[in-house]
Length: 229
Image (cartoon, rainbow, N blue to C red; front, side, top):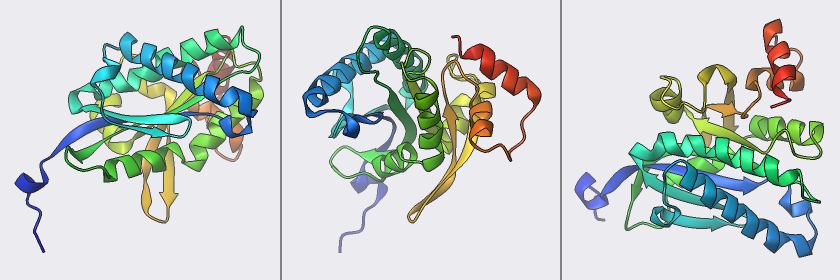
C-alpha cells in the first residue's frame, strides 16, 4: 500500500462555497430548468460583485439545483460576501416574479488535492448546508415572507471560517454581531457553525424558533426594524 505523504497528496487549502435553491423540489416541472438557469446567472453576478471570476473557480461540481465551487484560500472573505449580493438580487427579482426564489449558501475552508475528484472538504460543506437548525431558520423566513422581497438568501459558515475570517471582522458585509452560533451534528460530523441572514438578526430568528432560548429585548427590536430592509 502506498503511503500518502504531504508531497504525494499535494493538497492545498481552498475556500469553498455551495449554493442550493430552497424548496425547488416542490416546484412544477416546467419551472425547474428556468429556476436553475436563473440561479446560476444570479450566483455568477454575485461572484463578479465581490471580485471573483466565475470561470476561475476550481473543483466545480453541480448538485442538482445547486453547485459547489472552490477558490484559493485567500478568497474566503469574498465568498462570504457573496450571500449579501445574492440576497439583494433575489429579493429584487422576487418583487416581480410569480414564484419567489431563495437560496441557502454554505462557506468552508479545507484541503483539496487537484488530482482528486472526491474531497472531505466538500463533504463537510454539504453537512453544513443541510444543518437542521440552519434550514429551520431559512424555512421560518420563507413562511414569514411569502413574497420573498425581504429574505432572499441565508448563509452558514464553518468554525474555521468564523474563527479566521468573520469573527475578527474580516468580512465587512457579514458583521459578527448579526450572526448566531449553532451546533451541527450528523452520524459522521459534529462541530459548531454560524448562520447569517442578511438584513436580519440571526439570534432573534433562532429565539423565534425556540422561545426557551432567551435573548436580550434589543434583539427583538432590531429584528422587527430590520425586516423592512
